[in-house]
Length: 198
Image (cartoon, rainbow, N blue to C red):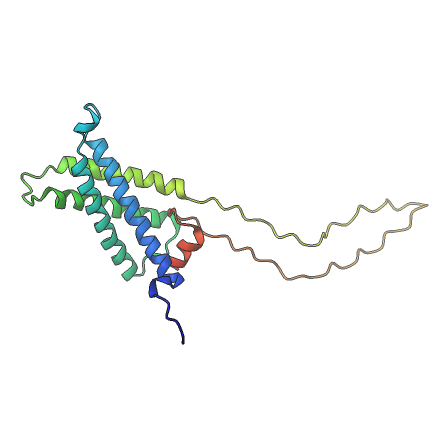
């Protein structure tokens, strides 16, 4: 009897789910902190907008999942570092702004506090930029070690030293190719991220 494995245990599906979770989690956290920072720190901890911040964070996570789904559907996931970071920053801004609109429950643009929504979106986007830059991996390629092709210095030809013979031909070995992973603004392990977006 063969045992069926759940679809989410497939390495590709598992990596994509982790990518969605990572993106939504960071968006929620950035918007949550941006809302608390935007709410001011002059008062006590009890006076901070905790409920509003939590509502915005959940709304931003949902918006992030929707925007990431659109990104995966459009096959716009395997991007170099800077375009990937710019897409993430744009999604953070849009998800934060849409979360503010949804959380307010007011779609009357004359009563909606656009300045507060833009401030929260800006702070969340700056947080996303910091996270993306800190998550960037600096990979240093390692040169492949091969046989030494440096010849010993020859003695000067003279009356006592014979003329040096031609050095023996170095054996030709195939070049070793070292694959250097591209940096990414993701906090997932590189292999997991490459599996998800590749």
